[in-house]
Length: 164
Image (tube, rainbow, N blue to C red):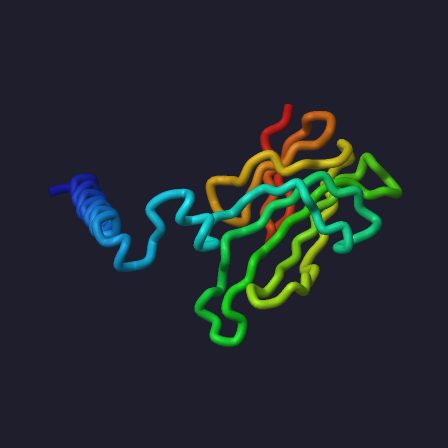
């Protein structure tokens, strides 16, 4: 038995574990508190969303276009009880061609918003708007006024989206 066939068996065994775990979770989702549909997710705070009504008090030097709110995270922390992450995007009032994203959080039991980071777009293409949440939480697609696009991550900022 060659090295290639051994690798195939290892991949096959791993695939069996992954599939069996997925089937187990599918049939036991209620035991683990996993919502079955979008309405249950929204009601429980477990879904993220894009919103238009922004909090202008976060930064008065920014003309905001829209924002994004995460699902409830850090629910296991006994002292905090969980928090929501937010991203609000737009452009600087002093330089409307400069896009900006502001990342902040709000504890579940508090109405106080705390700014964590501010990211300027790597190049000036006008005000940006969150276009869609990404495949992974905390990552989203943003588009500038002139159509230029980036991928935005709340921890790392902007990365190119394959613009020509």
